[in-house]
Image 1 (cartoon, rainbow, N blue to C red):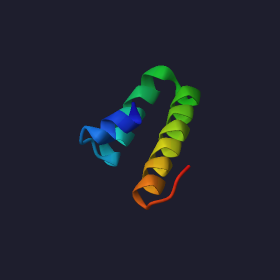
Image 2: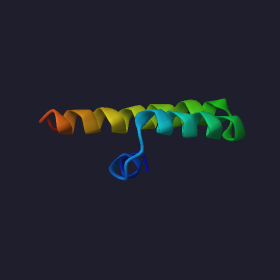
Image 3: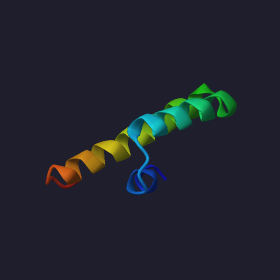
Length: 54
């Protein structure tokens, strides 16, 4: 979903805000895991844009 959001024009700041809001309702352990997953996808996107592959 993070990759799709970026592809559809969402900013990283908007993704962070959504995850912060969701963490309130889902609980902090789930919120922390969501941030970890989002960071992994964002790092992959950065690597792809830099010409690297993962």
